[in-house]
Length: 143
Length: 181
Image 1 (tube, rainbow over the protein chains, first blue to last red):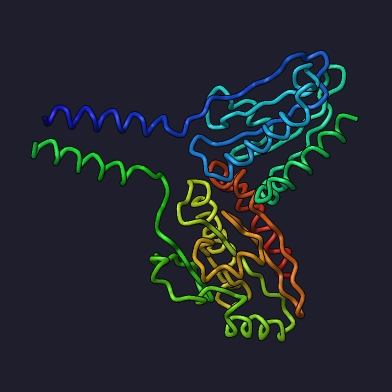
Image 2 (image 1 turned 90 degrees about the vertical axis):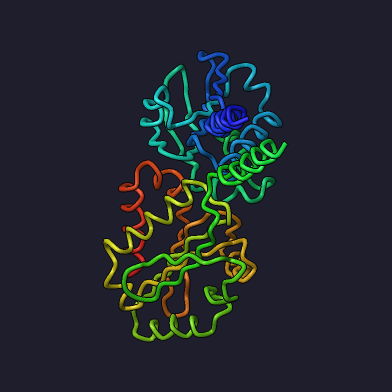
């Protein structure tokens, strides 16, 4: 019986370690056509606000820019900035915690990056406002 | 059967203990002078309105009194929910460190007032609404001659406080220094 208890306890601890890990998302369909790269970085152990920002970024893109994603005009990167494999890109964007950024491209060249982190944390408490304003920001960059 | 029952009890107890990686304690701290100290309180037992600027007339008078000396007063407010994430805790710790490292004199003089407020505590409803703080938040407010301007540093906190504490402290230090002028 003691062994059973130890096994259950062991499984439980293992599950705890992985419970908050989410896989990175990279959607990049056609680098030749890329105009706007949407990047959201997060740490491994995330809070509800951080999850909510990701969900609303995804919803904005799915609801209003699905064709642009499919054709490669918009890329989406959701990355854990604490993973070693993401260290380089996290350093580039100074993403040491939750960070939302939009980077514009033309002819495969990176033009400029807008850091929307402060804006995201200010607006996330209203999904409607967040989605509407993010939609406008992306539309402006696509012009 | 008894052993099985004991095992299950231990399992559920451990599940409850480790089920949340958050600090469940409710910290409502008001610092008027000297170094910032953190006191732990059970939110359900905390005296209502003790830490609310908007509803505490003594606090309002103190802020107004300072404005009579013709010097701005800076309010530094950390908001959090009851179940806190590591970044939220890091923001509070880095804020405390910034104040103690660079502004201990201003804290003693009452020119900086720092509060740590649980938005889940009903006593803080009014101030949470004023700042539109529904979760973790860091706000720095300059009060001068009856006028208030507020900087929302929540995003900077989430971006830097946990893994680049020095960078976050620099941002906060600069904002407080600017608002003290």
